[in-house]
Image 1: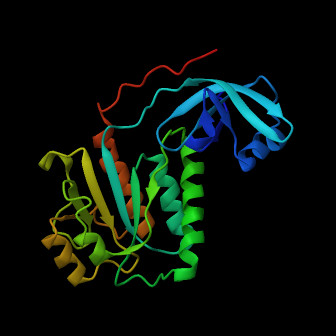
Image 2 (image 1 turned 45 degrees about the vertical axis):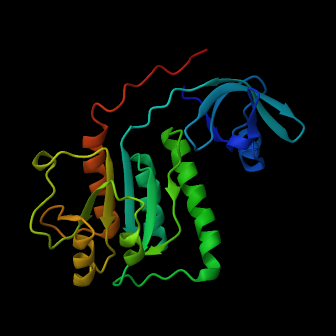
Length: 253
């Protein structure tokens, strides 16, 4: 049986013990009814994971005797820069991109997107996004939760030097050729740009080209933005992942 896994911030893990946050403690004790002495896993969302035994002290749940879990992250770093779309669809992208091993997700404000998040709602929206990727990481048994950036304009994103040493790919239904991995060596550091439902404006394509982005399409069909995002990530992550890790054995009791 697969062990249950819980998120614990790194500052709550000390000296071989982990104190679960109240929400995770409630889920362990009152929903799953996991008892004292049972074995569970925890992860901090920053790349570390552990296995240990449950101890319940009044309202506090502690996992003691922690032993490290092996990391199985790809050495490749994949950044998804995706235009903002309707909330439920964008959140679906966050969840599936997390499952597929994306390291960072950058919401983009593009010219043909009609999605605007009021300034007063950015912080609660980002808190929700962070919870979603942590839960998705827990579900798919990653030890690292992707970093979700604050939304930024496409122009500001292109002007940033943050990903200057990455391979840069922009997917665009009007591009002249499909992306084919055998045509060029695929870097272990890749940025993928996906536009909104309305597509990319011609000026944005010119800006991206000037910033060093290569333009490709994903086939003859017009894909929804969320479909294009996950299709592109899946195709590229498959090629990045092959041969990049050697999974280690998970410790057993």
